[in-house]
Image (cartoon, rainbow, N blue to C red; front, side, top):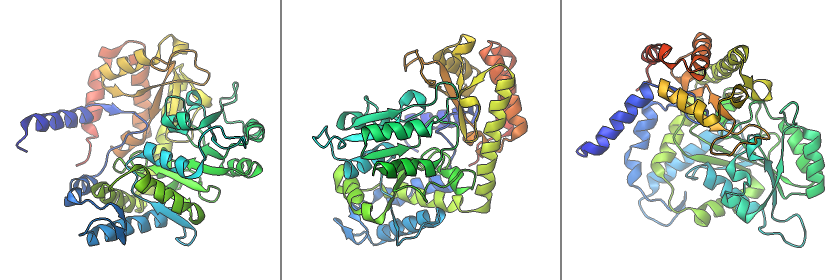
Length: 412
């Protein structure tokens, strides 16, 4: 690379990733094949439109690529092309959710009362910005009816969600979030949606890889629409997929393009295709199940060391720690960990009284470290390391972290 400054930054980032323990639940490490696809000549091709209906010439290969990736996505999640459609063009999860809502939910507080209403998990409960939070465009275009966790158990209370849905009658209900550590009951969510004649959207961005690996229940038997990003547990590039029942797909496709996007990023679609191929291999099932094992062990060990785990524990790939109970804010905890060589993200806990920029907790996930080959033994050690760091014994563990990183290098 002739650009020495960018080359240097790439090298620095490569070193940073190799020499830190990544516990950010929304990050992972892609394979060399995915990197090659992402940097392939498909980056040169502008293919505005859909296969067979492009606005540019020279799209014969691009059409074949997009159709291949669509077929792989449907096959991976065991979906019939007669009942389901998949759009592989969304640039990321946020525009994908926006496209779905624009396609399916009338905007504004209209006289009928239910138009413009969407139900989503409240942000401090583990929800996502694009599920109608006020700071997101989704919260500006639609009125969010937030559902919360039970204050005592910090679990979803489906009876209370049903009561809220019957009272507010939303047009669309979103199941899924970005920081809920327990398995979601999609059957109950569909029953709630049916009771108020609402559309059920499942945002499986975080646990899509677990679904394909048989480590998390599939939402497809119950959902009308399913959205997922591809860079978390699915271990692909930064992109998104929208699966929808055939009767809804035309409106969604139109809203993706020309509604909110221009030409698709064909290089990203190629990389998604590689990720879907990798996720179809037997080794990926082992990986997904190991992620859940690792996360469970990490949470349980931290619990034994005196840290409160939100919702009592985890049976997914992530969990939240209430650090403020031990007199450490989320920001302070994240800073202490990063200085020692562990990266996490700050996270609000249910009914958090602290501000979002310095909440009461942190979020941890084991997907990236599992990709590096770490297992239960390493999770027990990492729990001890985290405990020492948060108790401000950083010097004692820095060398241990570097040895662990060297023992489990990031693959090429």
